[in-house]
Image 1 (cartoon, rainbow, N blue to C red):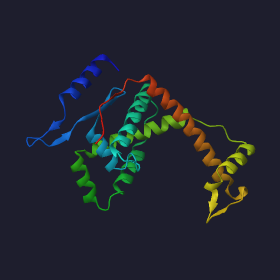
Image 2 (cartoon, rainbow, N blue to C red; image 1 turned 90 degrees about the vertical axis):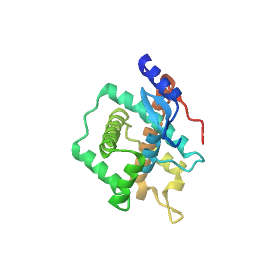
Image 3 (cartoon, rainbow, N blue to C red; image 1 turned 180 degrees about the vertical axis):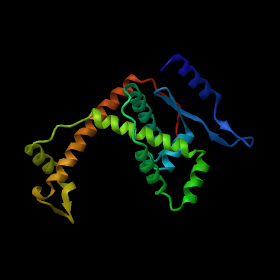
Image 4 (spheres, one colour; image 1 turned 45 degrees about the vertical axis):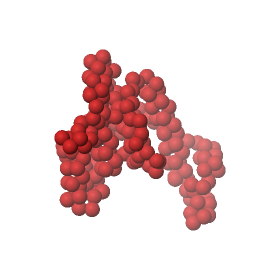
Length: 210
């Protein structure tokens, strides 16, 4: 991280949370990663708009923050290589999918207002997500698995190919096995790459739990 960015981030962090006149905390810096500040408002928005799954852990803020830290590191890497911009209609579809997660347009707007997020900013976040996905798809390709690979994966992960408690024959679920195996191998490649990004990055994590 450039020294000026690091100094500014630390200065903001040391300045403490943003508060109202009634001393109600409305925002604070939780982390700095990839040269980007990650605020409590970013965590709330990522959770409320379904951009990051919080999981079932005891501290959902920590889980979402960890994913946003990873996202910031990946986005910094993406910016270095500048993959093709996603088509505008792809961003439109992504935004529409987020809107449809809410029961009514009013509920969607209320969440934007509560989290202090402009729809323009949400759209930009979705554009970045599409850029990240395009980069990962381009960088991490997996060779087609052999029949031996498929048979071994089917045998070792048989629980995933049961229907109503009965193991489906391999010939019936061969395509499902192929997709699951390729997804697992690709996930392993991405996880190893992410671990390398974390080791090389300077991350300032200020969150200490609820």
